[in-house]
Length: 329
Image (cartoon, rainbow, N blue to C red; front, side, top):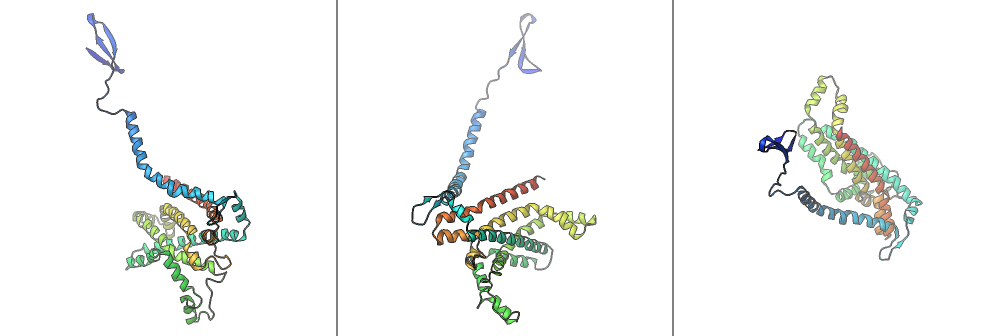
């Protein structure tokens, strides 16, 4: 008779003849029909690679290959229809000595920072207003989201007509109501051109902020505001200590996406001013476009496109790390 030892289940005690006892080691038979752990892991690994392969192919051919091709192209003196000549970092050095490029760098930072800042403030203000219960609130929300739903090209063309010197709506309105007696060159005046472009960008992009912020506001439990009010918190204190902390992640995500979209947008400057007057509204996407397709200098155009890329990468990394840290907290 075999009896398992309590301290070691794999060892059993058997009673032999004349009351002698001996210890036997029990060997468990493998389960029949059950795959081995290594085989299961191998099957799961093949399944994982099979599911990831389409995504990896898309990243390889639609992201990685064009990106590294652009880097290689930026190191060449390449014209359309002619073989390229490897020049190393000469294109980048020429850009750093170019006054137009330096002005473009300043314009791009100013254009992006001011536009994103105004969209943030206006979007949050509109979201706070629309979050309050009132009659016809759904109508107001629908009208607010219309600018974001209109295609960018249509928006730019309409605003170019509004800013037109002779037949534009804005000049005719100001002259009709005797606000001014002279025609204002909105898009031709170096002092006004950038402000006009930023105004159009803000008008078109603010509804995106309002929509995301409004969704975040409606997700905040009303009990938090009621508890804060019972504790004696004012409306301003409720905003800073209840609303802002709850919307911090949404703020970071919205600003990150909007910064990328604003900095890389080409249509507004292309249609409204074409970078003028005197490069006062020139930004990186438009300069790269005109250099590569207008001047047919593909190598220099690729270099211009890649100069602003590290700035965007740093911005995305910082915002993403801040967002993940907030989520952990």
